[in-house]
Each structure stands twice: as structure tokens, then as C-alpha cells.
Image 1 (cartoon, rainbow, N blue to C red):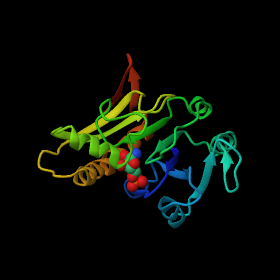
Image 2: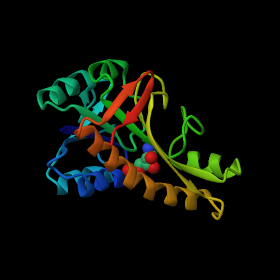
Image 3: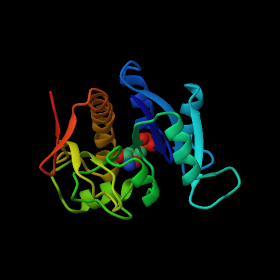
Amino acid sequence: MKIAVFVSGRGSNLKSILEKVPVSKAQVMAVVSDKVDCQAFKIADEYKIKIYSACNKEKEGYISYTTLIEKLKAENINLIVLAGFLKKIPDEFVDAFKNRIINIHPALLPSFGGKGMYGLNVHTAVFNSSAKVSGATIHFVDKIYDNGFIIAQKAIDISDLNSPEEIASRVLNIEHELLPFVIEKFSEGKVVIENRRTKILN
Ligand code: GRF
């Protein structure tokens, strides 16, 4: 299976995919960002992976999403993974890769999701809510923020933690396990949608 990973910053989820998903199961063919430079691009360079900066309007150093779709289709990419990508994916892109775009969110959706809920904002909202658990969610991407069918979740106890930063760190460890696991299941054709629910087959 050939995948493209969309990033905006640090790239730790990209790195965990590269380190944990066997290339026999899935190869990262491209890394895409809304930025012209970010830490995640440095990881892509280390692995000699093509990088693209994409945006809705023609800008120096960027390609349009229309052009990006052509390039990713030409590479036979069949799974798009949003890993810390902070922009909303344009509708034309969602249509071009229907049910083939997944996102990892650092909380247990549908709680603590939606526009503006990214990075430390999420963990601050969780901390201030006095919730005793948090975790990570992987879901399909559709045309509404953090709204697509949930594919997988893993919850963790945060009752012993004393700050949003501590929650962020514990949740990130979960993300680094859950995302490679789900990608591998996709590569085995074991992620299925039945009766409006997503299942991961054994
Ligand atoms: C992760 O916490 C992810 O859940 C969220 O953004 C963060 C990206 O971190 N969407 P990284 O760039 O993968 O290190």
C-alpha cells in the first residue's frame, strides 16, 4: 500500500509510521504540508521521501490541491494520513480520496474535537474538564472537522497527571502505537465499514 502523510510541524507521528510500519505493508511515498518548511520535512528528507507544500491558491513554493491530487493519483497512493496537519482538507481532495483519508486526533472524539481543537488546546480543555481519561482517536476524514466515522480509539488514565502538557505527552505515546497499527490493518484490507460502523478485522 502506498501512502502520503500530511504534516504541519514536529512530525513525531510521521517518524513512528516510518519506524514501525514494515515497508512490505506500506510505503510513505510523499509528505505534504501547508508549510514550506517544518521539522517533519527534515524527517522526510532523511528517508529521501518526496515533499510537497500545498495550498488552495497559487503561491511561491506551493502547488494547488488540484495539482497535488494529480501527483498523488499518478503515484497510485491509496491512503492519505493526516498526522498533525492543521488545515482543513478541501472538499475536492476529500472527493478525490473518498474513504481513503484518515486523521489522528489527540483526544477521545466526539469529545474535545472540532475547529480550533488542536495541539495543547485539546489537552487544556481535557485538563480543565477534570476528565479522568483521555486518549487518541483515528477517524475517516470527511468535509466536516473531526467528524468522519471513528476507526480506532485507545483510552488512558490521566487521573494522576497535573497539567495539559503531561496529558499531551502521555497521549502522544498512545498515538505512536495506534497510528502504525491502523495503517498496517488498512494495508491488510482489514478496516471495513458495516452498517455505519467501522470495524478492524483480526
Ligand atoms: C499530534 O498530537 C496529533 O494527534 C495532532 O497533532 C500532533 C502532531 O504531532 N493532530 P506530530 O507532528 O506528529 O509530532
